[in-house]
Image (tube, rainbow, N blue to C red; front, side, top):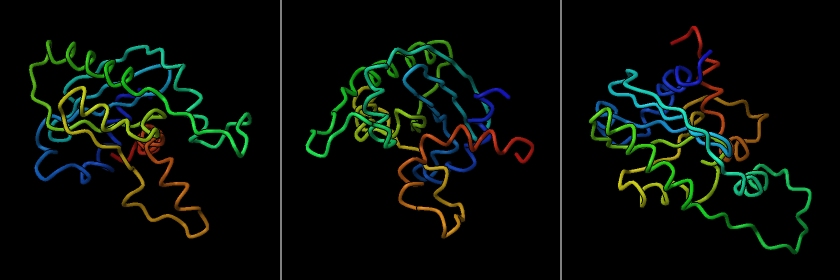
Amino acid sequence: DIDYLALCRAFSLIEDQLPENANKAPVALINIDAQAILLTIVQDSQLVCTFYQRYHGEALLFAIREKLGFNPDKTPDSMPFEPDLTLPAQQIKYLLHHVLAKHPLTLTSIMLSGNVALLDGIDKAVTDATEVNTLIADPFKNMNISPNINHKHIKALSPAALLACGLALRGHA
């Protein structure tokens, strides 16, 4: 399956998180991890354009691992790592500028997903860089989740699962 089609399918899970009437206007779905940025623009739930760019965000890996709870080097008295979010925000700004030069659209919202979307403050950094309202996608917001599952943990990791949710919807949307 192709990742950008998975993001389009997953849009149905998150479109109600947009401001009122924003789902009729062009919306950028951006899945960003430490190695790549996948941009998909949808309008009225239809694919408009996509763009994939390699990204060198290795400096964010430590913060992502810490957020996921996979940091074996952390000691109880160590200070939390504060990543510089201006680099991914600027990268998104340049990517949008490049894509929108070829597809003249006016974006009303950006929805972030992927591992980098787990980092606190990334939505504000992207809003500041792009001057477009930026939200963190939560594909589990309207799902019924078993009471045996740790809801707090699922909520914390949900932005990283948007692409997987779109893949799981294959054949259903």
